[in-house]
Image 1 (tube, rainbow, N blue to C red):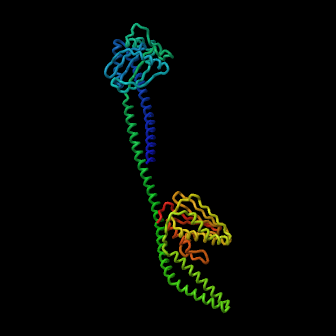
Image 2: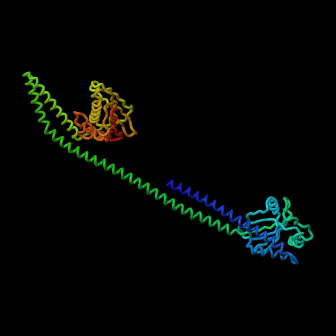
Image 3: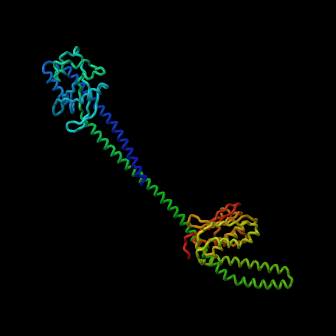
Amino acid sequence: MIGFVLMMGVIIGVVAVYSVTDYRRLRGRVEQSLVREGLSVIAAFEASVQTSLSGRSRAERLRALVRDTCVRADLTFFSFIDPTYEVYSVSAREAWRYHHAAASNLYAVLEQKPYEWGYMRGERGERVLVVVKPLLLDTPERIGRQTFRFYQVFLQRSGKRSIVRKIYPQRGEVRAFPLAAVGLPTHDLQALRRQAVMQALILGSVLVILSATLMYVTVMMQEHRIVRATAAALRADNEKLLESLKRTDRLAVLGRMAATMAHELRNPLSSIRGFTQLFLKKAAAAHDTSMCQYADLVISEVDRLNNVITNMLDFSRPVEAQMERAPLQPVIENALRLVKGDAQSRHVTITAAVAPNLPLVAIDRNLLTQALLNLYINALDAMPRGGDMTVTAECRGGSWVRISVRDTGKGIPKHMLGQIFEPFFTTKPNGTGLGLATVDNIIAEHGGNIAVESEEGRGTVFHIDLPINREQA
């Protein structure tokens, strides 16, 4: 909306500047045309005076010539100004005489230029363009004394010294000549002004309509792009949701299978282990070394199967979290104490950096300890020849607490990162593939998220984000 208003302001400014500039240019042309018309009227009047004023009744004929010139040329008025500032003026309505001392300003101006023009108000308040120019006649020797005396007759100056001496006055001699003032109507200028206003309005309206159309098209295209982007995001979310539903279905099936298998296998395995232990005692009493080795192997394999069944039961059993607001540091350090001996035997250095003043978080201490313990064991398994394991905890964004477990092990191949939380997916030769799946379930029960970053040959880091403001269950 702001952009549209700014665009409209720019367009209006451009239209205004263009219209004013074009109007001034056209007005200048019309004004020059009117000025030339006024000068032509004055020149024609001078020629008429030189050829038609002879014989008797010169004054009456002169006045008739002035009136005829005013009417034929469609002038607002036609005036003479005597060097003594006496004015004789003829308009379409009447003729009059008066004394105008302000005419001295005109003489001062015309001493510097051949003519002058400007604007004034007419009898009815209309605007009139006025052209003023000295009336220049030839010498009496060339045109005759009777014609030469026309000004004296017209201005009733008989018996006085002639006021016209030369056809071209020198500097400072203009005051010796009468002036002709021609008033021209400005209908063309008024029509031009109206035309400029209409043109500006039409051009502005067209540009506004075009701009509004362009803005509408731009907004619609932007909305279309937003809709497409939103639709693409929704499709991606739907695909993730479908994958999550499929995964949930698989987990449900695996849970039922695990419960069934645990029920069906645990009792036979317990019997097998018990009979094998009895067999081991008899083999030991008989000093049968090979049979003792076979019995130990059977017992270890039975224990391994029991471990797999236990993991399956832990994974399939519904998580019943007992949530309470508690500090994270004791939980993190307690889980580290459980793997401290194993880390020393593997030459792994453990570093813990828990930020001070961490807020209390709604957690189940036992479940979160189990999740962290699984991540610690995975980190130790990734560093069989030693390395560094770093555990950090800090606030993130004011709404989350992030626990990070970092190792310097062999890393996880990039193409496997999307599968590590799937049940039964493992890269360990003796792994069950249920550890990270169990961790994922526990963190989801806490309303948090778990993510992994890994680079082959440089190590792996798991990030657990727990919400700060989640109400305890």
